[in-house]
Length: 354
Ligand code: ATP
Image (cartoon, rainbow, N blue to C red):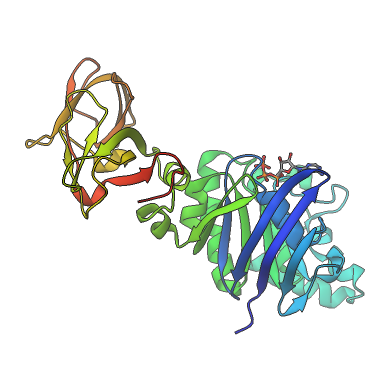
């Protein structure tokens, strides 16, 4: 089937600065794709290139089978939803919803009918007469969504749409956006720097760094099988712990540069003596295991009631997590254990997963 959005070998230069490097991304109809990465990685540039707000320097960009490289934004039939909402302040909700239809020459009654339909779908029926200044942040965000939906676009492009909302509303809105996407059978591309948002909303997560796609795939595949140390450290919360080490003689265990730690058994066989970076996720390090393999003194305890986070007093420092209120206090020693299948190994020079 023709992909809804197809990006092939796309590069973008801003003068001498190389912002997108050989980007390849195929988005099937109905997919929800998140572009995620640290500030400056190029995720907004990629989204804006799909929208036509940036011109790509080379490569091929298709929407629904048509080449879009030189097509102006208004002819691409995609709808952007921004963090700033970009609502018209002098128009009420109804005016904001129907503006694009009226602009296209749709009659007043028909526009009103569609606005009522969209307003009902996203819970804005009672707010049609209000002006943006009379709405909460969540309601404004919903109007911005409604304005995109009413156009029935080929794709929705979201640029950090929830950044202005408080934590509870963010969690609520991300479920709402995903549910709406499913109900509409939409195709969505969603930019965020928040990996939890990306993991919980998207079917397909694209991790970017410095203009390059480091890895793309299903959220839990990225978590289970990160391609390299960068993705391993970026996906997962709290972040993976990294410790230097080397593969032990025999190739089936790893020695850690960590005080008092024995060689840990591995799944599989590696080059004996090879220097490696060892990755251990906090949630995989069993705290207080009776058959502990090593231990670490605790320096800081942060408890949320449902989870306790421990920072160790070791070098390198480890982050540990325990269910519940936490049994340990600062100054206690945490007995630790990890299963062979939960140990990640990375090349010390390239960061590639071994
Ligand atoms: P953030 O999360 O901070 O928005 P981002 O991943 O969305 O980051 P982009 O906005 O895509 O990053 O920018 C990628 C890089 O391109 C940055 O280093 C930025 O400084 C640079 N850049 C963006 N727009 C321009 C421009 N018009 N001229 C020159 N450089 C630009």
